[in-house]
Length: 139
Image (cartoon, rainbow, N blue to C red; front, side, top):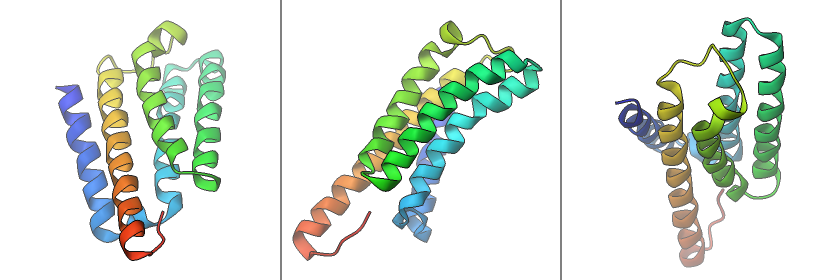
């Protein structure tokens, strides 16, 4: 159920952002990646463990770096960052023991991340095709 909800929510966010034009700004998807990565930090705060927060902060910093690269260089870093975060969700409990993470969270987040990456990838391909046919530059 958590995976289905993650998939539906990611699709809803992508469709909403596209419908209102939020996804035309390069910063939108970079911000999404930072937010997605920061939730494990929130879980660490809820666990009350400073050591866990420090470990989560290292992982968060890696995704923030990918977000910056995606914003500054190429949005394909954001696609890679979302996929990498999805994979991180699969292995998170084996890498960092975080008692604040709900049992359902890794499956939800994995599904959200991979769906968001697929949506962004599709958007980038569509915009590339539009650029080729119209010459209009975008994301």
